[in-house]
Image 1: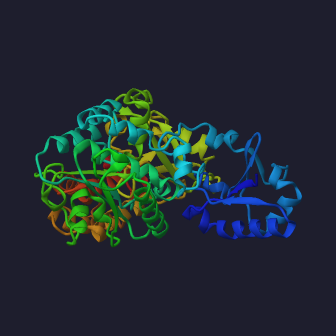
Image 2 (image 1 turned 180 degrees about the horizontal axis):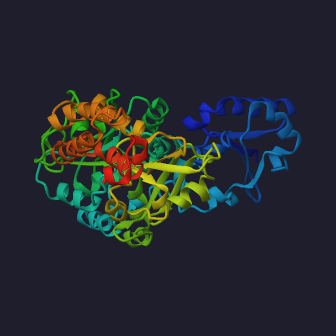
Image 3 (image 1 turned 120 degrees about the horizontal axis):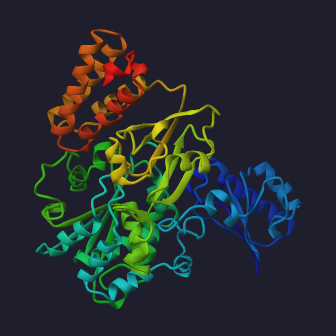
Length: 516
């Protein structure tokens, strides 16, 4: 049997030269007359080690990284195909601390398998959840998801089971399942990693959702900036359909579910569920008034389940191992795990899937190794460009939806962007308002006008123009945006602004008493 050598096909690995490394390995093996099987797997998520090369040995997979084409010949000289010792050797992959200390449920297969191999997926526990769901009533499937405690992983954290139950109970001639894969938040990439590294997991989760609520058609709304994910998903859907996991008669169950991928056009606002539906219908992406809720009148006016990638990709584990198994992870009302994404000024960036309750200090220092610059961490932005800036004094708070909400912050999609002590927080607050102004759909006044005025007011504060009066004006403006905006774009833009002003007033030229 030929030795299996794994080189990731993930976008991050590709950007760091994985294709050239794979070509060099194939060429060197051929030159030496060594028979190998080159497998293009997903990334393990330890991006600081990419391109990460793994070799299958009797003891397990041995890792080397980061590998460049110039290293390949020396790796073969050192006995790469038998897991030989080399300066780039990291030992057994499963023993790498960054990976070993995670709780991988949703991302368990990423990096282990060939993303497009159905055999690989099934051999690693794939489709067990769907088989179980096909043998259950829709109500029982929804009950299992409800009991798991799964909440929306896209940011709002709404209980998934309640949303599904609403669609299940709705009476209509047609229902839909829509996956929000418009992953536009800065520092986030877990959705992309699932779609590129374990696409059948998303397909399985969406099919289970369709079977549960009685929907027969699903759509993945994918951001246009993800061409590799687009190609992978299309091919995976084609193969799943050919194998009977999708179509008019899923696994001869008499139940139907079909799936398509649709590309967005680059608008951040289309990450908001009703704007997404408008775009999916071929219209301009503008926020809808609610009610009616999408669960009752969603895509084309029909009852629609809308969840993001990680929410839907968590479902196969729940149906395979039970809601109680999933609920055993986490704390309080935050159950299960979340793939946190470490980005920004961080030494060891990448994906870290942990149960809720982990602290920022653990993520940044134990996993991330501190800042890349070597300077102290001053702040992290959690939850995307509209997330609050969390100061170092709060780094020991457990990452839990309710605990963070108590401190005016949010976990959102799990993106964590790290800043060292050279960051100008007034500049970052201004950026948040400017971002909102640029990306606003323009439908509501608080978001459309408030964000533009917000930029102007921050500029006046920094320039010391009637600073006290303008601070009060900024706070009032933020209150209007928080409570008057139609959607989370305008409603959350004040989070980074107020957190920067409250925790780092000196960057605005004010002291704590003025900012209070």
